[in-house]
Length: 607
Image (tube, rainbow, N blue to C red; front, side, top):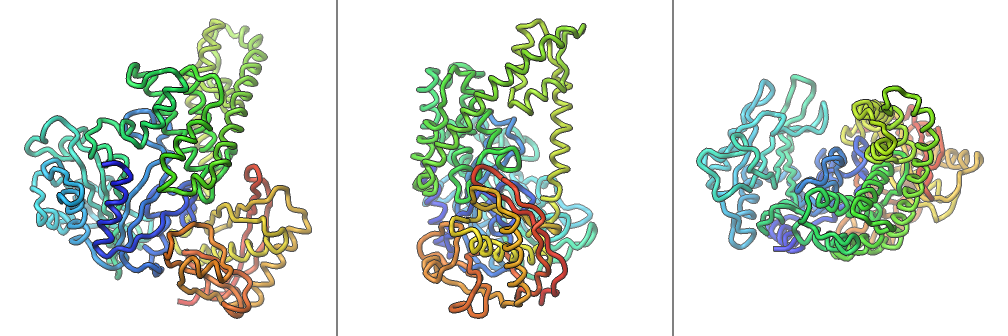
């Protein structure tokens, strides 16, 4: 079974269980400012999991592209990926543990669907602690579908408990694993007794409680199910492969790398690792650049992660002897492979290739400058009796010029030096901690909290976007927003800095709409109907899919200021927002500007 077939079968199965198929959303999260990318299928659904009504109903299914950047440096082994796909299904106050477990088991084992061997499946459930009891309910439903007792492992909260944050929705989960060891698993083998031979393929989260404080959990009146199955891992298992890189998801990319490097994958483990890194990082970069709200390489936030991915791929290409710009060629293969599932990649193909080529050229230039800087430092370095380059110097070469540690080590070795690697790691860690502190504002709550303040900020982004269009023109388009309890950040396409007069005019327009105390109206309609009414829509939804349209104005059909397709929480009328102030306007990346703004005061929201 191919990845495309698995994707289709999953959606088909859940549609047969009365789930509505919805569109996967952007890689740049709208509803969770605590992360740079959509890291799980549930991110775009946060408002609905927290009580908003979804226009498609209470049973949903989709496939979602995700990026996780916490282990970029580990990518290169046979299973770690930066960019991956998640197949998901949700119950919004509809069914709960019994049906969720039965659906998962049927899809995995039924001859009509995946036909996996039940003997090679095991599960984990929450073991219980001082806050919540052992999840005997989930374990009981697993036994009902035929899971033997010895294939159920009871694990602690660190393994089997999900939480939206320190407060808010939370609950136990049950994870599903497949045996990847030799033959059949021995008696008593499960994730708890033999973690190495069991690969996680699916996680069912049961949002059962609301955490009021550290010690208080209360049952939620409406309990939700949020599940996610890893497409690449399940695909790998279905094909009996030992690595996700050996499936058709990656092999066309690897074949292209082989042609560019004249190296045959599978003949040298060190070089194989370079191939895997290039395959993963180039694919991830294409997905980020080709996204509906695609970011560009930069020195901050998501753009910085993208820059790291591109530069690491180029560096690994150099190790394989690729001495020309090559990522645009690989991008063409990635786009061809994924254009049916993700049409936005083909729509943005020119931009993807152009940005990759520009960034690759910049990096090669930076490496030359880094080498010049090394040569400039050399006379002073020669005076060091220890014949050692400090970690601080090595890190400065890396941070300023993108000069990898191993290149500094090579040049040092040629000149009879060593490099203080531990010192480099310490400097790098300090930099990461400083970055975390600087970004801490991005993680203070956000829409996951559904607080009054974030709801007000979210509605203010609608007013801001329309005000920018009124002042700067129709070329303005939203490229992302980030909201927490203290401020909002709004990125938009525009080629030059705004003038002081333009900034003041935009601020005045927003405040005029707030003082006018305009009603905020929500209606459900198809995307085509929304566009026909003049609504702005960031995402390409599936044909005929129903969406929520929020209109700010005296009359939603004839007299309105702003009309957008959106899912997030909104105020009921604009006077609830309060005073709006633009604190800063700056560049975000090439052709993208960024506004930081605050609000204060405003009327309380109505229940």
